[in-house]
Length: 352
Ligand SMILES: *Cc1c(COP(=O)(O)O)cnc(C)c1O
Image (cartoon, rainbow, N blue to C red; front, side, top):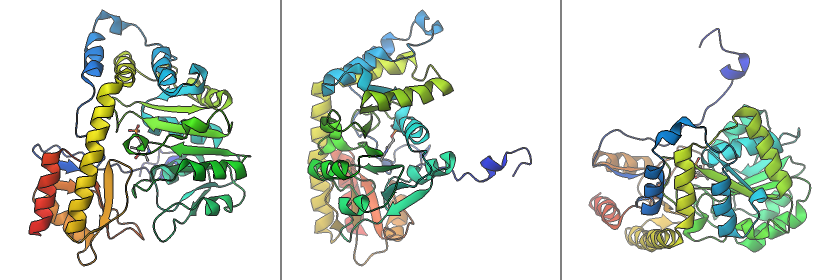
């Protein structure tokens, strides 16, 4: 540890992302990337940006991308915020909306970046246990006490379980004095977006990413939709940190990806169909598989140790995610791949 570090840095506990191995020919099912490429129209739009115009700064507001998002969801552009991946959008929300000197509530099993941001922004974390079926019980959040905000992924990660909009609406009716942030990284794989509720609940903020359903993880694009006042808070934080967040190439590709609805629906539907096949294949091998509305499944085998399975798969060049966390240490999170990759996985598990 360097003596030059501030005490603040010494105490940080950074997030550790899923491994991005440099080896090729792997069946990589560990970080929920899309098995299909981005929209060809998005790729073409990005290629068209590679001109002398790159000498110019990008649009600091990302207006064209905001317009594409606003058109898609039927909201005003002033209700849309865009950033470098939804992780950055979440960071601005923690900084700008959750620092009120009271705890932030989130499920005990959920996205592990939330506690990291609590550490970074000095926010007390209060974890609310999922029920025995690994579901979020909104009554437990409602009864969670005074808070600076509530955040959870829907569908939840890494469980894949979906909360219906009526449950989210019940939470919003009871929790009116702080922001409820619904992290919809996986909503396009079978959920219903809470963006439908933003005009009714001024304390609802919904974040999404283009990393999963729109297959642009390598470009880093995320967004938030909510009441104009919430969006303004995010803009104030962003413009105090970096006024040109998204680059020209990314802005063009992201807008084109949003505009190409046909390709988007086609690839999401393929992933959903494959997920049902993988879930059935795992169940046939004796796994308990939680119902998933995401592009991954969360499964455990009643007799085989999850860490052992993950290690044995790795020897065969198949990488899945295993969390050593309490309550879920016997589960594997398996990203849905191409049908060919999924078959390789199921065959390998069969032979184990
Ligand atoms: C993947 C993921 C994100 C972050 O996505 P970005 O690539 O940063 O846009 C946010 N929340 C959850 C729950 C995720 O799984």
